[in-house]
Image (cartoon, rainbow over all chains, first blue to last red; front, side, top):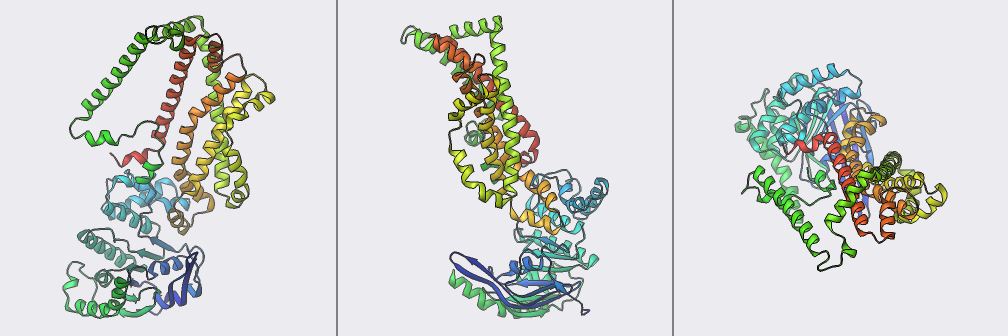
Length: 263
Length: 281
């Protein structure tokens, strides 16, 4: 791995103020994501993982510390990143092709050009024939693929993913993992992938940052030295996968259990 | 689709109960039976009215369908109907168009300008809670007994309904949709055109649809207070002569107009918000 930092969190904390008091989502976060790296972030729910992504996207500023992008403080908003959120953010009044083409439309590309690009990506996602459909006509898995196509179609330098496949069933999720890895291998974009699923993180990532329960702090950053290309359907039966899983679980276990106790 | 369903202001009965029963009946026979019932209700209702009039209740009070029909026919022959109908329609449509355009523009301006909205909020609430019809005498004083006072009244009534819905619609836009576009490098203008406007369109249509009957109310109330033309005048004049058939005939025409206008808006909404229906297909 080349030593070329793209996203750096330096002593970052983020607090939210409300009438009922102040909540610290995360604190003392030091994390560096290399250019072209696939970084996964795992932790119990509510540990401020999404907050980390929002700060990298420049949708919110840190309360303390600094978030750097390519050596400079993250601009608000950071237009070098594409953000695939947990929730469905397709525009429901636009057809699938117009959704995928929207970023190119904003850049003033001609309709013919941007639709050609959109169709390429839809084709790659196995969505040919649904160009003229509206999001409401598609299944959840198909909508996710459209959202992924939309994010990839305008080729942002970095892709932030917040539990992007959380709502899908286990089989479909593995299919999406395979597609994602294939695409990532082709483009080598920088990815931060937030999930609460250890197996998902191990299947996809180069490194995994494990967070504690709120306020989220980094427990450990582990290198996933499983060889690539990985077979998403079989990699979990690799003995080394099991070792890594055990080690990561030991970091995660305490905070997950305390979380269960609290709730 | 849940949000779309809750914001739709369907004037008409909810259809959920029909859907629940549709496992027994095919859609077509369901449709036939619904219409058979409707026609039966009309026939029975009118027959009962016709029979009761003069037997149970004095014809003077409730007239009777055959008399109302003759009155309508007479107005058609003399051409009176068209004159009055035209006046009321022009007032309603002009009031609706002016009020809707102004309401959408003002609603967007305030929705996109939170500071201005915060400053103007108490004034808007004050005007909004005022019964607009109470302004009729003032408008007649200012604009005379002719067409313009009714147009102004209808405009005023429509404006507030459309304005309020447009304003609410711009505030209800999902922040995440806006954020995703900001990250794509969208300008403020692009966000307004590509997210806020289309998203607020459901609300705008809801406001427009619910304001149509009020435009008609504005026009008719204005006519009833002071005028020499229009369906409101016709009702007032007939009542002044104790002519209940005339009153009912004019009311019937009003009912037809209101239903027609509502239907027109529903169709245009269906075209513009096609994506909402897509999910059911």
